[in-house]
Amino acid sequence: MAAEKLRELLEQAFPAAETLAVEDRTGSGDHFQVTLVDASFDGLPLLEQHRRVNDVLAGPLRDGTIHELRIRTKGTA
View 1 (cartoon, rainbow, N blue to C red):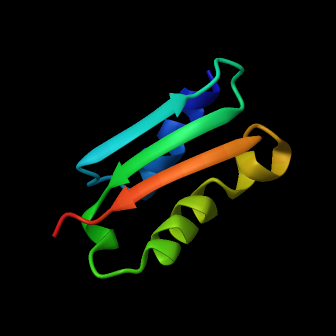
View 2: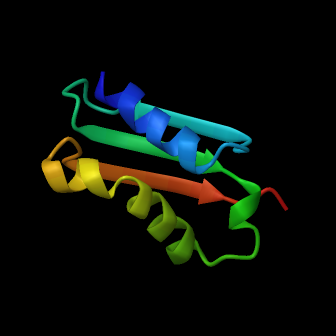
């Protein structure tokens, strides 16, 4: 359930994403791997790309829904 919620938040923030995957890494519902490929990341440093994802997921990070988050991002260019 939590993975679906996170995916919905990311879909709203990155509606034109070429790739968007949210994986529950452990089956426990609080360790996630996010993979996101979006044109809005083109030309941005990796740190800024990850900040944008963290900003979108700030609520679930704050309330404990996400205990661990691994992020893979890249632009489309």
